[in-house]
Length: 104
Image 1 (tube, one colour):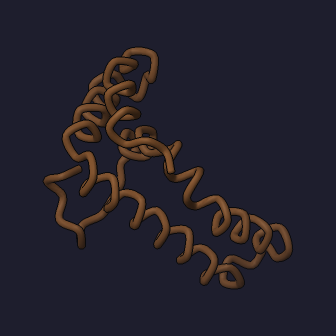
Image 2 (cartoon, rainbow, N blue to C red):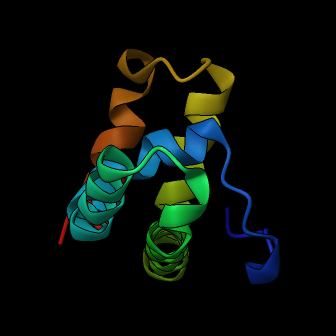
């Protein structure tokens, strides 16, 4: 992740897997607002603002992880990529990531 330019933020599944605890915690409110909006109206255009808020939150979380614990994030995401996102095979990298990047 640290070698990706900020304007090129395109998270892959391994990045999202690695950051899921942080995303879930920090983006909970905007994600719930988006889901409530989608439940009220099935028209996709109605919830564009809420969807943008979720993506904005995601971008902030990933940027924060890159700036605060890039080496551990990279190690964990590379392990997940190598093992097709099998979390069981990356417990050592997950522990190092969790120690360096504690959940807020």
